[in-house]
Each structure stands twice: as structure tokens, then as C-alpha cells.
Image 1 (tube, one colour):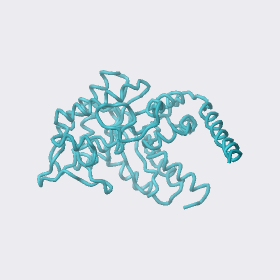
Image 2 (cartoon, helix red, strand yellow):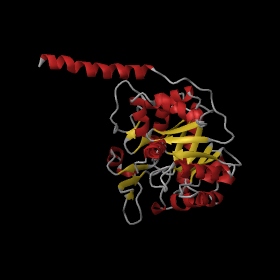
Image 3 (cartoon, helix red, strand yellow):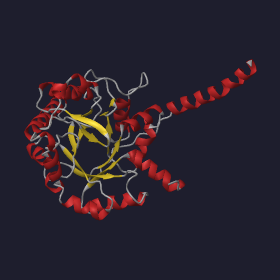
Image 4 (cartoon, one colour):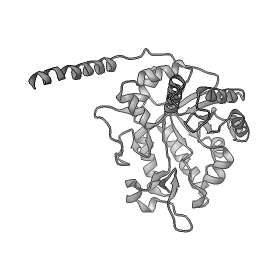
Length: 338
């Protein structure tokens, strides 16, 4: 038994040495890209943590930069919690000690010449089970029929009231916590920074809170951008009280990436034409968000390339949702496993 234990130590030692060598190695830095139009990539919180914990973050960002992309939007706040220290919300995501995924992503992005945006995913929407929702029932919006829950992909979700002082303090507190990381280029809100029409006309309330978020960011650092990734304008305004073209004209949004998740280049171009993006482009940098997920068919990289070309033909930038799906596509293309 002693001999067995003696030999068992060697594989563990070898793994430890390999891990240490990987942790010590860093991809070479790169100068910042300056493409004619924005070229971005989204990463989920799971992807950000996985890359950080496996020491592959530098290699991934180096490859993103080398591929001509100039910005990365990485989720720091979502269904599972957040990737930064905060007293606003409980810790739902288990994290390794002495490792800061948000700081690592922001600083390594800068080293690779990529602009890092902290993506405040899920905005005013919370899972029904979230302690914030349970402990603050007066913060939640209620429909005319008394219901508060709307399912999103099978998950019961509730929505925060943008006019409630407690909600405003909660949101601004999170913004302050995110801005503790000084390497960021900005913060991005998305289509969940909204209020479903089932809760009534909340357009003014949402606009007022957006203005407060923008003011808070600029007070911390005038160079930081408040980015938004909404759906096409008419749908956003009519279904989710999200008057993002009004926000652009008002000067409280600094960048817009419109989500156009369609199956073909023709559908992308048709949607772009009526999305509001051209009006927004008169005021701020703009781009089109393209879906790279596994639901799109055919399941190959060429389908994504065709959509990118369709967007570039319209003289627009783009961002890809999400990096993890691109990896699955690349694996599929090489191994033909799906």
C-alpha cells in the first residue's frame, strides 16, 4: 500500500507542475485594433469564469484580438449572481478564493488591445427565487390581473419597478460596485433593461432610471461608455417600454448594438433596414448583434460568415453572441460530431 501511495503522488505532482506552467505562461500582448466599424464578441459569466480558472483567458483574448475584434462584452450580472464584490445581492455563484474573474477579464482585455465592457445582463429582471425579490416584494411590478411572474425560457421571472427608490438605489449600487474596476471601457445594458408592456406604460420611469445610470457612470469617469444592446426599435418600444432611440437623442446612451438574431443573411438585412440602427448611427457608434448559437441552422461557421458579410455590406459593425457557441461550431467543423 505504501508503494502504491508513493507512485500515486507522481501523477498528481505532474498535473500540478503542468497547471503551474500554464498559469505562468502568458500570451504576448497586442496593440489595440482600430477597425472601421465596431467588431465585438459577447461572453457569458460561465465562459468568463471557466477561462479565468483554467488560465486560458489570455490565449482566448489574444485570439479574439488577432482576429480583428476590438471589444468584448462579458456578463458580470445575471441569473446566477455577479462576478464582482457587492452588498446589493447575495452570492449565488461559487467562486474560487483569491481570483477575480471580472478584474482578470478587464485587465487582460486591455493587455490584448481589446476594449472590455462589463455586461449587466438581465437588467431589471430577476428569478422569482432570487433573495432580492423575496426580501423586497414592494420592489416588484404587478400586472392588472395581480400577477407578477412572467416566464422566460421556462424560468419564472419577476421585474423590478424602475420608479421605486429602493430599486434605483439597488441598481446604482451595482453600477458603483462594477466601476471599482478601473480598466473597463464601459458598461453594457441589454434587452432586459426594460419593462414588459404587461405591466403598463412605464416608458418615462425607465428613461429616468437610464438617465441616472448614465449620469452615475459619467460622474465616475467621463470616458466610460454606456452601451445598450436592445431589440429593433419598434419592438423594444411597443413591447418593453424601451425607447432607446429617444435615449440616444437625449444623450444618455453612448453606443448601440441592435440584436438581430435571424437564420439567414436575407432576414438579417431585412430586419436591419427597419431596426432604427441608421437613425442611431447619426448620434453614436452602432453595430448589429448576430446569433451564433446552436439553434441556428446550418450548424457551421460559414452561416455566421455569411451573416457578417450581409451586415458589412450595409456598412455596419457587428458583435457575435456568444463566444462559447463559436467554439462549439469550430469543434463541430473539425470533428463533424453533430
